[in-house]
Image (tube, rainbow, N blue to C red; front, side, top):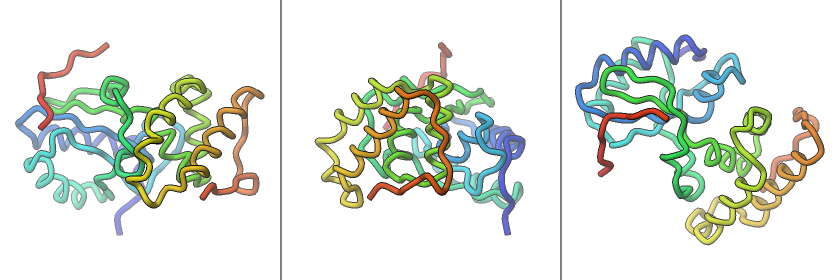
Length: 200
């Protein structure tokens, strides 16, 4: 059974993956991996990430490193659950460079909207941290929701009115000071220069 991943374990994964790869690429962390690296959670079950481009070299290395480091690594990112936000690459935050690999946090606005759509307690707490640290702002969050709403029909698991309601409730809470989210309170709604890299 693989172990929970703390920030140190995720850092070791970055070091090991960078050592395995010869071609330039980007690894975007999201979900629990972002949360532990930002200090919002002590551990995460899965290290969720997106690769750009989809590199066979990286994909072959990940299963070996999962076993060596006793990690759960999943290819998962917000664009699998909600429509891709315009400009998400430009807003993704650089973490570090390990040889030819750039590691970044996937766009916080995309992460926040995906988490608000899902509505799990841990997800809502993560979005609360994003707001407190001014990684997302209310006006922009609503703007990005409006930008992707015409594409929501492509994601049949999403109930569009419930999704909008969840985002609006959260944005409204930002205007009334800090909000604490607990399991009993929560109801689930239905400048770094990177190596030149061309996305496929």
